[in-house]
Image (cartoon, rainbow, N blue to C red; front, side, top):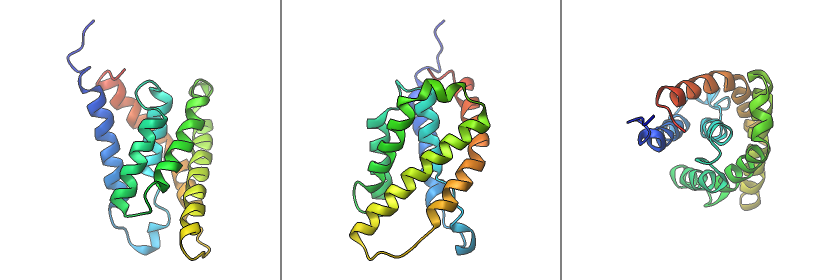
Length: 163
């Protein structure tokens, strides 16, 4: 059966990624900014486990590079983080798919933590080191939000028949 929306598949993926980038860039008060989830990481991880033939390590690296440009960070830092976590998810996507949504949340939170820790570590190779635990809180909030992100993106994928 041919679906007229199949052409919108990649466009829908790109749109969800752009929304995640916007959510990452929206200014928040300092008191709650440290709890900002890794929206882009969550969306990339969803598409990596849902459609590994559409979103892969190279795609995640490109998204990370775009994040570096948008955030003005050292070129390649977010790209490296996205590539590492997407590789880990891609290599185990069949197992992750079979987990309950809360088990997936723990896996995704762990991957986000690893990606955030890697970004933190590399950033501090190039800057003066100071302890910042923002990545811990971002990982925790990402873990707690995974079920909602998962259900929303699954709805988008099914609604637009993205394959």
